[in-house]
Length: 258
Image 1 (cartoon, rainbow, N blue to C red):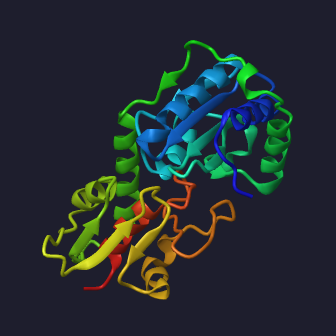
Image 2: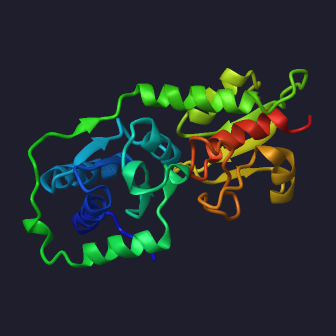
């Protein structure tokens, strides 16, 4: 079932987290594209109006940054608004056990959120606070890059020579990781082509799916909390619980044979 981000969904999450935490909950709100920023801010006003505390991501960023932030700021959940309006829901903190912090909500949990959202009869009457929410600092982006670099560096052989890559990365985060890891960027485009979709969850390359998975090998996390599917990868089970194609792409560039 596709969930569209909107006032009733924010109210549904507020109801679910209030019950799960038995207190004032903390919800991160992230978004993929700038045109959904107003919806994110309206969601923050609703969360505050319903007794929770909202934390807005600093700007439009890929989904893995929102997943990463859940544990880093000890939030109880997060809602990520894709450019299409579809919502991804993550849980953390007091809402789930520690092994699932930052992971996508399960179908059972989503069903409870859906039930609460459907119960909203008039979205216009939902209480909206005039303020009170916070913004996650830009430093979270640096923390994500630092964590990914540390994890990926630990996977590689010290004498391995990185493969030159050509990058089509609108977020700039893949490029930042590659530069930190010492991977040469091939401006002529003759190197290994890598592309990460804007939401950060799908990796495309000139290698086949089988080759990618073979190259990453033990770098891939196999936690059941991470969504599986073609092009969905996670290389850091400790913090990045979303299917993180950004860090997977950087790991591929470092580990792929020349």
